[in-house]
Length: 170
Image 1 (cartoon, rainbow, N blue to C red):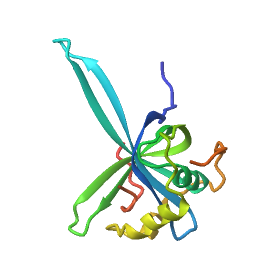
Image 2 (cartoon, helix red, strand yellow):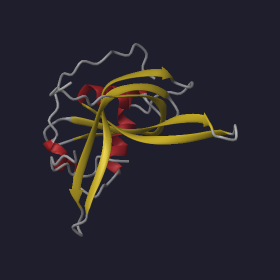
Image 3 (cartoon, rainbow, N blue to C red):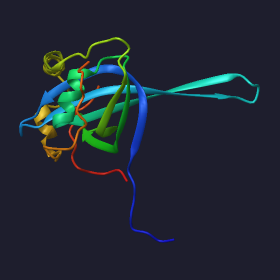
Image 4 (cartoon, one colour):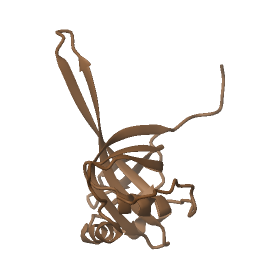
């Protein structure tokens, strides 16, 4: 079976490990970074329960970024859909670095754990306080739709500091 199509789709349900950090880059786009953890359990050969935790870096853009910053906080359980993106950059010593992130295009709050979101102001402040190794303006190579569809929320409740030079790993 020969086909020219490919799929890059990620679906995760996990708990926030980092509060959202919101930044506005030079072209006016808004970007929000946060992390979630997912857990897997299984029984090994000796019938002992084993557990593994995976940590994921998430990135949201524009209106979805603002919604994430407004309603999310550490510990909340969320559902996200998106795609894998890998950025590369060279540091001051010429060493090449890679970072794989999930660019989300949909997010649903599943359990707020009785918490309130960090809010836009605190998320923006966190973005200003995080110095980062590379200026945020260098992220302007990311092209995003300004009006991507986002499910509206009825009751509001580490990372892009590197340059994406557009070079894909795969």
